[in-house]
Image (cartoon, rainbow, N blue to C red):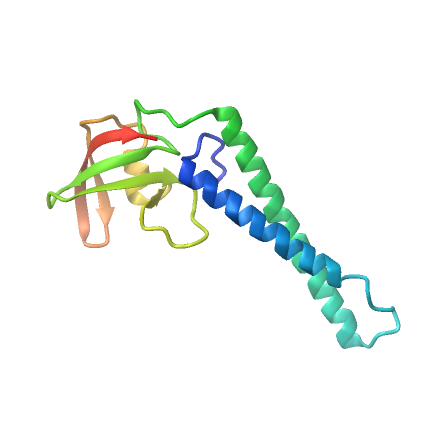
Length: 153
């Protein structure tokens, strides 16, 4: 996830909330397995306990990160509709004439073909632009252009 503290799209918020719920369930399951063995266990038992404790630390860190991101986005308010920024939903007309709608957001935990991260070539090119602007960016097939058709949330 990026360190962006601005708004996020409604879909981005739902994805983070789903991830948070899943992480909390996983955390409870891992936490329930800790501390249940006596200290007289063999080295393998101790290693397993240490591995679960480390997993719990990673889960706690990610839960805290998502909590902060959701709080920051709430404080930032809804995404702007006059300029492309993180959280914007953008309709684009590409050089070949196709029109597609994307969301500018943080890194996705799971593949989402409508999410364009702010630090990707297209996302970076779009930031700060308005309806009617044409941007140029580096695509896998070489330099290409896209025109911002509309902005929404």
